[in-house]
Structure formats: structure tokens, C-alpha cells
Length: 63
Image 1 (cartoon, rainbow, N blue to C red):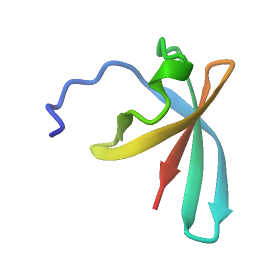
Image 2 (image 1 turned 180 degrees about the vertical axis):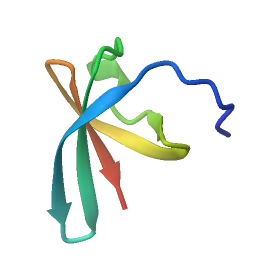
Image 3 (image 1 turned 135 degrees about the horizontal axis):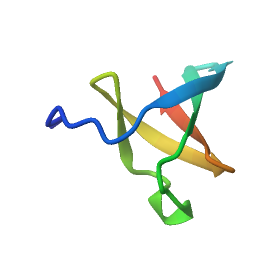
């Protein structure tokens, strides 16, 4: 459950369509690493899944 605490802000750098959903890429100063792939990330109150990390650019899966 989202508790309403905002840890960080990010900037959307890319949105790409897939056959079933979209991928949203967000640049942020969050301290995430490859062990965090698969965790839930709240974006504007919606919980999404972290799928990639490349130089502070995080890929988030949306259905």
C-alpha cells in the first residue's frame, strides 16, 4: 500500500509501446542497483515494476 511519502522526483526521458503495455523510462537520483530490479516503484500513486537500470535512467513496466 502506498503510504504517501515521496522519496524522490524524476523526469520522464522516454516512453515506448509494447504489444501489451508500455515502458516508461525515468531519470532520477534514486540510489537503486541491479538487485532492485523487480521491486515496486510508486509513480504518481500507481505501483509499477522496475525492469532496467542504466546510468540513473530507470525503466518501469506499465500494463
